[in-house]
Amino acid sequence: MTKYIKLGIENHFPAFEVCPSCKAKVKLKRHGFYWRYIHLIKKAVKVPVCRYFCPSCCKTISLLPIFLLPYYQLPLRVIMKLIQCAASGKQVLLNLKRQHLQFIKKDL
Image (cartoon, rainbow, N blue to C red):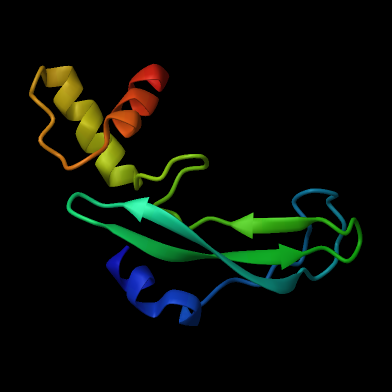
């Protein structure tokens, strides 16, 4: 994760030969990036999310890094830490907003 954050848009992003949306066998074109905040234990950082364009169905597809889950601003390892704390009855000592904790609790 730290390597991905350091490299930013210079990361190696894969080439796709099949569209995940329409299943056409066409090479997807890189279509820029959007920036997404993730909340680490002590700070929030911006990470790039690579976007691809399918010339067949004209849809844009985003490729999330492996350490992120859709709709969550917390990386997977922080979510797992929260689940472990909740399961063992420990108090959560992470620097998170109340809204983040409530969002995760409703999915548990």
